[in-house]
Length: 376
Image (cartoon, rainbow, N blue to C red; front, side, top):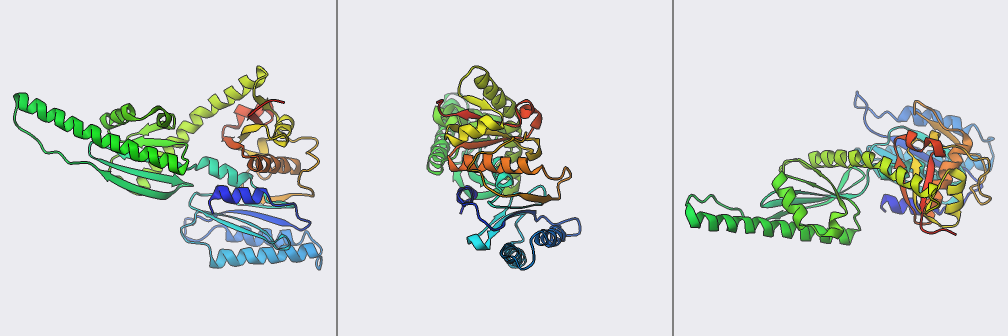
């Protein structure tokens, strides 16, 4: 299953009368080469178990979940994983494990009546699925990246050209021949890239290579594909796969940060003009309830959300408790529940989710807003 499919499934989970565990761990090795999450797991599992009376069905269900998670971490966590998200409720027949190449910044443990999806949705936004193409005059490499890992890659090779020492008309004809070969090569690259983007439903493309090759690529790119080609960068064609991933991801994230302010400005302008925009937790929740939301625009800092006085009547019931290794600690309970409702309802209604990492951009409107499909 893809992470998006996991999110879809978890968002549909019906509230359970038993504890539902959502555990996010950074599984990168520490300076000594040892895992850094085990101490967090041991301490928090023990503390969380004690919050339920011994012998109660809730305690029995939670203890079973915590034991199953500990066994999974011991026996099934791959050494290559930099993060893992686990969701469990034995009484509700839930166990989902998502191993990730992308790192999770901090450890989080949530216990409530439903899975807590905010960190997973944010991770998907930070490390999106995109295509990258490296191109020069006679070679190209095309990649699909997702969550900081390679999904697929291929290489295209055009005809290599040799130097020609003759001058005059012969040299001019030969130069035109070379230019035509380069042009044909780039056309083939664009055709392959276009088919990939169409077949895989890819929304973002990054291109890299020498300036002259990138200029030719832009000239040959049809408008519908050019709309997705938002970033270009310099990169040697023989760069390693890891170097390609790092360079293109940094370029993508930098571009995303630059466009965050534009997107928030579009949201605020739409709201001020009475158009297809709403801001604030209450208005955004109402729009999600009515399936009006096309794109949820939400702060990347959970604690920056302004809590609401009252959640919708059909919101997930019961308490939610959280523990974390994050320096800022956890948000209050109402904010935690709000963040869960916003993400789950967006996922349930097919709304896009965009996280704004600069929390100051949405501070005046409570950390959240939405662009709408329609008004009622």
